[in-house]
Amino acid sequence: MKFLSRKIVAFTTFILFALSISKSVLAESQEMTTEKWKEDIQFLISTLESKHIHLYHSIPKQKVDIEVENLLSNLPEMADSEIFLSISKIVKSFDDSHTGLWREREYYTTYPVEFFVFGAGEIRVVRPPKEMPELMGAALLSIDGNSIKNWTDDVSKVAQVTDNSYSETDRLARYMRYDKLLKALGVAKNEGYADFEFFMSDGSKQIFRLNAVAHADYSSSMDAPTKLNSPFSFEEALLGERYFWYQSIEETQTAYIYFSGYPQIWQMRRIAMEISRDIIEHDIKNIIIDLRDNTGGNFYIGLTLIKALSYIDIVDWKEGVYVLSGRKTYSAGMSNTAQSQELLNAKVVGEPTGANPNDFQDASRFRLPNSNWDVQYSKRKYRFHDTVTDGVIPDIYIEPKWEVISSQKDAPLNWVLSDIKSRSSKADSNE
Image (cartoon, rainbow, N blue to C red; front, side):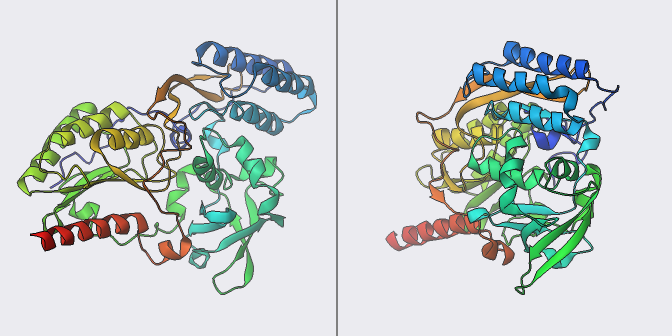
């Protein structure tokens, strides 16, 4: 029986781009002029300077001033799409995981395909359009004849709220499907449709024309994601919702917590109590916390779970706690990963997190006065590690590989389960 209601739960979240465009944002309410653009740009910089905790932490103010002045002087000759790209590059140059700029929701029409960037810049389809299932696993070569090697850097320069090379690849995979952005960057020739060239599984090269859809229709326009083989599933969970659920397997004395979103604080207290009770009743020794899809929220709510778990004496606190992390582990998800390392002696398995443990977080927002574009900025700086690293570095690094995913194998989880089995066998042999 599930513990939480299946009604929509209101989260307290750090706002990331994935959430930004899902919310209703005011459309441009008036025709923009050079003076209005100038007012917006000056308001953007002055407001960021006054509200951000330390705006120029990674780039000198003088360099930004030069870019702003160049933009202001060229405004009369620039189209709105060019202005957006220029402002996006300026905001991106602050190199801040929680500072970003977004247009109105309607701008983000998208091609119905999900990409994933593997090693050596290999970009593959991991969710194809419903009418083109043969694209699953195909490697992207070009868009409208424009080779990926010519434009991936240009896309990355306007992709907002990135923190390291891991979140850069995640944002690249997302931004490269926005048709208006691709047209503005000169990657695609048209808005609304483009010809994508792929290297297919049979060794052939084929071109497919994709038509853009509204962002709200993006997920429903594609095949279901690849389901990796696992002994754990939401359908078998003891409690939770799809963004947070718990299951235990008594035979292996293992508990699994899927943690991609945050319930309310009062809900987490009740959930943590139920999880603790089940762990004690079933003599659970091993805990797996899966944060790979956790893009952010309120890390204090995650600490509520961590605190409750830390009181349970029967857990193997030396070797039995694991955290699964990846490039999508961001903001509060990264924070809870680092905190689990510190407070639960957790072994981190998978990719480094997309956010850095010592960086700027905790976001607020404002809108530009004329274009109504949405701006986010960081209010705090957190330090979760003694040393500066790109992401929380896993104890066991497992690089994503298409041949593993395509065979429906969950390599990080399989490593953990193998480690649990190995330790259990050693313990049995010593008895």
